[in-house]
Image (cartoon, rainbow, N blue to C red; front, side, top):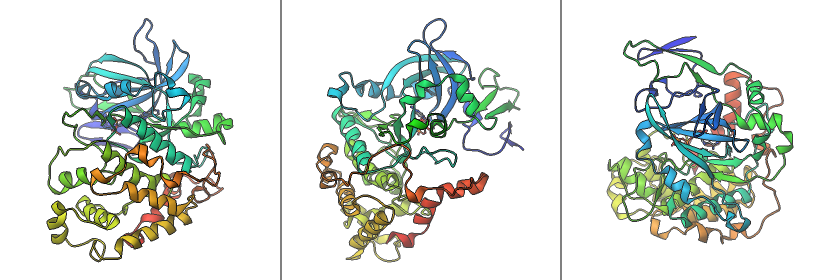
Length: 455
Ligand SMILES: Nc1ncnc2c1ncn2[C@@H]1O[C@H](COP(=O)(O)OP(=O)(O)OP(=O)(O)O)[C@@H](O)[C@H]1O
């Protein structure tokens, strides 16, 4: 199957695995081929093995570090974002130089950084440990399904407390930016990753416009390596071992030092009210935000992390309705919001300020968490209610949250890799294609497919 898009030819099926080929232009992404050597030294220190992912500003590659004989992740930032990116400064601040007295920081660690010049410009390259996303799309072929327990939630708060203690606000805390440390990755050699690929992941790029500089784009786009699937199959001893969280993607983070914060990048569902309302309702692009905004985002992300789907209804396509939901779950309305709330029809079917609406909402959540097998559902609701407060000044700090009663007792459930939550368990026959996608995601879809399940 082939398709054209503004004069570019793509060969292969539609897929989210590939970055947009038009991002390969002056100022844009760095053209990379498998086997390329980049970085300092002669020969260059890092050899590209496979693509791990891509974001709005970068591509991320698994590479072999020939100096330390280990496998690393290289985040190669697009040229036009390199000059203004604060990510390197932030990651340097978050380096745990003294290993914080033997404790893990639960934050991705910077191993190296350098600049790389391509025909598209100068690219910042950040070298970190490779991680597997905590909520990786679960592969039906792999046993690598991390069990998210109270302990994992605690690690995320400890990580956030560490970030905040270094004067940094993350600004993009949503489920995709939580990962798991996988030191097992160092055992494998380049060819073993290649042998794992069950389909040809390379897609030729053929530009039609005659003005395209052939050096600006790679000869092909590379599909993503599913590290969770790879490790589940190739390192079965990983299953059942303790799990250690890594917060990553500091591309939207900044050092809170009194200067204006960068433009917030958190997806609207996870954005704190002080970000969402000015951005979505007042059309102000640069609202003020800081560490307290992270507390809100993490509270929302907990909902996904415990396997209960999104906190707000998935089918809510209109972000301007989010303030009504925020008022409903918090049981209060800020003065500055009142005109908006009063003038818009409530998406909840009744006033978002109805007297019993907040308690009913949280009772529903308690039942939902209990159904999903979440440990101490009432305790988790209590913790989330402390985090989801409209006024940022009234939110507890991450450090204070560590003393929450939710963390004082545990039923002993261990946070391990590969202990599949019963509701996440996939059918024994292996589904393919669209069927596989539907079944993989069905837990979330069924839970939050309609507004009526919210209350
Ligand atoms: N250390 C890592 N190990 C494994 N995969 C990674 C790592 N860092 C990033 N990735 C993958 O690459 C993707 C893009 O990375 P990241 O989110 O940091 O980029 P970004 O350009 O800042 O994107 P955005 O802000 O749009 O999310 C991630 O979603 C993840 O799948």
